[in-house]
Figure 1 (cartoon, rainbow, N blue to C red):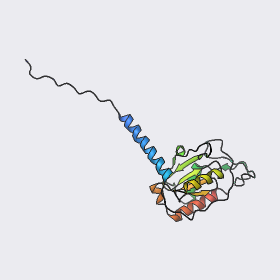
Figure 2: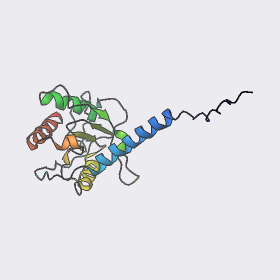
Figure 3: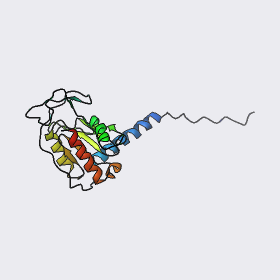
Figure 4: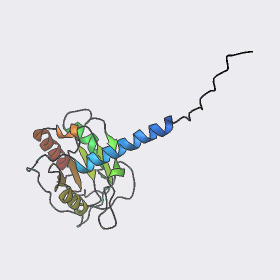
Length: 191
């Protein structure tokens, strides 16, 4: 007789790698969104408000689109062929204008910038290691968002229908001089 009996095999565990990966990605997305929404509370009281001017609404997702010049949109070019600046294009142009190749790891995080029926969200949100660039459909919407966000994060600066913010830990390290340089360069790009 065989006194040695085989040990029963433990039940095989289901593979959960995909679930774990999706959970980690979801948690990072939530963390990033909270960091962007809450931001730092550093005081950037030298921020200046732009002239209140309405911009024409965007109809496409292209990086640039033709601008329409009208009394309601005096900041648009008088030439209908001049492309309208988007947050993505602004990110690239701000890097060029400030003498760097990139503002650092640009990412489209527009999904974290949703609004509601009374207060529309942004058209595009590009986050980089240096700054977050919010593009809004109009100056009025940008003004609302900037005023609201500055209640908890004084770093927000509005430039026409755009807002620049320094929300993340890396962005908070951006010096006041660099913030002034980026704000001034964006103003120049919009002229």
